[in-house]
Image (cartoon, rainbow, N blue to C red; front, side):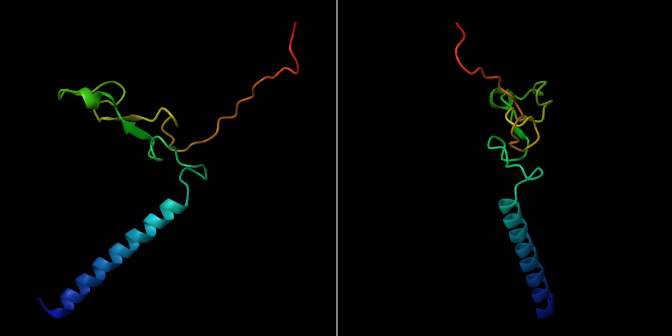
Length: 97
């Protein structure tokens, strides 16, 4: 291998590392899922480890994960975002006798 090939491979490797660093900084600074903050339970992936994978003895899994070992996040419903739910709570002004 000549020195030109080594320099070319080094430049390509550095370019890949720089691109990965840029993507990582963009993902960390910009929230996922349309401007809403990431779900703290699944970190924005929408999936969490299924309980069957912890106690499994090598079988195919359960209905929640279909054998993948990952089930939908219960906190965000699989969306990956911590969207606030629009709920109206009726309040009475004063106590009823």
